[in-house]
Image (cartoon, rainbow, N blue to C red; front, side):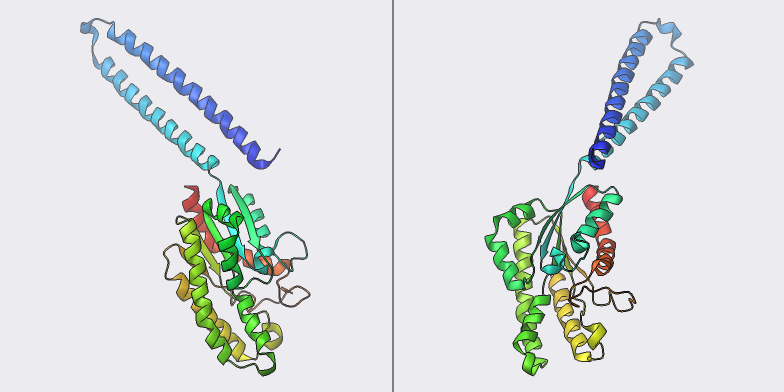
Length: 293
């Protein structure tokens, strides 16, 4: 039996017990009221006032119990639906444990916090912003999931940068990255517009870029500047929407001494994804509380 089913059974038994108590309590109060109205008017004294005060207190307690039951039912019945879309970082490529990268770690951590949550993961290795836009427009499965989404997590854009690097590998200059940044921001805005059009109530979180080459080429300042400017482009896009939030990632591995990348030296390993998940959780806490309440 799963933990969620076990908790539901316990809550159901408690609620049923409280409901029976309330029915008995109300019935008992009605009998007392009937008995009191049959007494002669001469016996209406201070005792009657005390009984009235007791009844008011009991009614207040009963209402408090009802409110508590209602809140408990709302909490345990609410199931937060999180949709993850994007590239290989969402897919979890590089996680040697096979547990799904930062999304799998998030799922486990939230379950440990007794947060009722389900994940739909639509991460796809190699996706750029133009690829994701096409998938959003043509894939009904993704859109059906988005319609039910409370939260949306996105990793996208790293492959846009990598494509520019591949296209200009023999003559790597900063200009192509400057030229590509604007169109990237436009496509990112279209992605946000599409998601909000499908589910306007969802809170959306965009993860920023980190530098996978910092360990080997950290002394090449141009790479960090390119990432900083592209991250700023992402931030500017998210600032255009009330329900879209930016989660910075550029510094996440900056002072880490342990190995955080997989054997391809590009994707995070399990440790690297753990650090990503911890950063994401700190930004998700307020959104999760709002959904659960």
